[in-house]
Length: 298
Image (cartoon, rainbow, N blue to C red; front, top):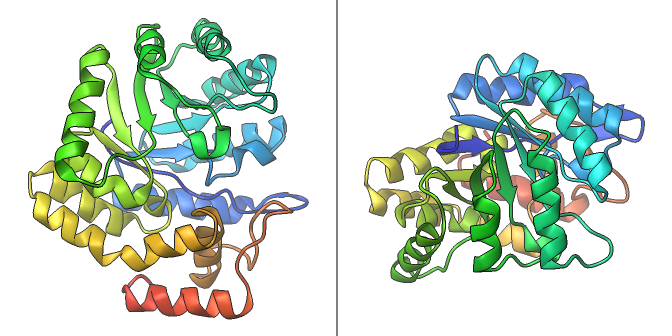
């Protein structure tokens, strides 16, 4: 399941809990679009802001509404004890894989991160995807740690944080990583602006934010890269440059995607956990115009 387009949806919510109707609609849309897998409770899915019961319910809803599409569920948490609880809930819900980032408040050491993954895989019956997301975790994996964790049982993919923008440098980077890892471990690119370059450079998967809301758009880029049409994948990604710039302008993708979901009528006006807020006023109007200009909304 660690190839092609893995679409990461929002988890729409308010301060009383998950908006189950909105969340199941998002999951069903992804299944209908034909994504290769669904990544529930990723960073855009606000996993870090949800309690155990909410995360358990989100995992159940994702699996129940995926119509057979493989579902990966995020299990990251500050304490190993809680990660293990989330792993148990995800597996009980029927998840096909789990996604784990090394969350922290106190900075983690390399040995602590390795120990986290070593402990968690002892309790898994499904594959694990390593989530390398330094922007949110403030932890940097090095080559030796990649190699060590990849040797652990159940570790099946690494979600890397983008690639160099130069295609030649990106290809060299992916070749370097592949030389470190067992052949059974796939590489998936994240950071949507880097997706086409990463796929063209040889990444197996795109772990996609926009795929969670605009799956057809993300699938077009993914399928072009998969059939070897690098120029078309690049062209389609470059067409979305205004959206990539909006992500940077607003501190990442989550506020933009939550606002877009509201514009599309797929979630409430503000479907993020406070203190996070969706865009409002002029910023919301500008995003709606941007999305219309890209052909993403009518």
